[in-house]
Length: 224
Image 1: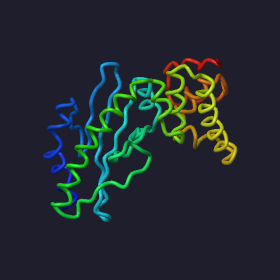
Image 2: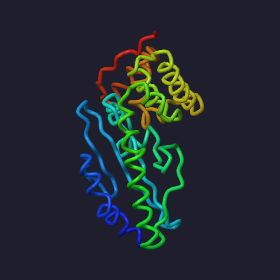
Image 3: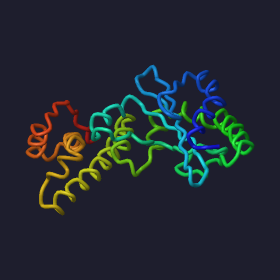
Image 4: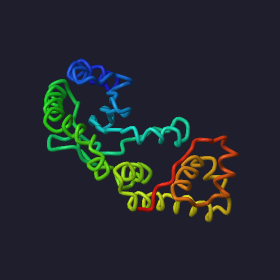
């Protein structure tokens, strides 16, 4: 099977199952399900033509994550803040994926993915609606998502730690380059957001807001 045919074959096999769960195809191998509370679930299939393997990636994006779309540079993907690799045993930060080297192997992979979604994938997405479970499931390397998730469940101390780590990285870039233009150009809105969450860098925030035309209000993260 060619990579160009993989996504249509996945939809022919699993599309009906996903649509029964209210998922809608929004892109090549990319399915989304809107949430009543304003967030959404995502199931995305990603292939490596050279290795002849593909992966099923899952994540939940609560309403509290919606701000990230406004903060990231134009064209930058949100990525998968939780999980995201589906396996028969659960959803983990890594996963071996499935082969599509021939039709028979692909058919077996589809059966395994179907079972994995029902057994562990869909239940895991439902559990992520619990703010505390979500906060503990976010990839700790995703500092902004971690801060948002922890703040949403009321763990303000840890939320400020993640915001603080992100701010430290911004300031390190500024010190290293002896200018703030690189942060301003590529991460300016994130800088403003995190700085105001922490209540720091007021002068630089003012300059960044003016330069970016960024007027989104940001509430300070409580200290306790």
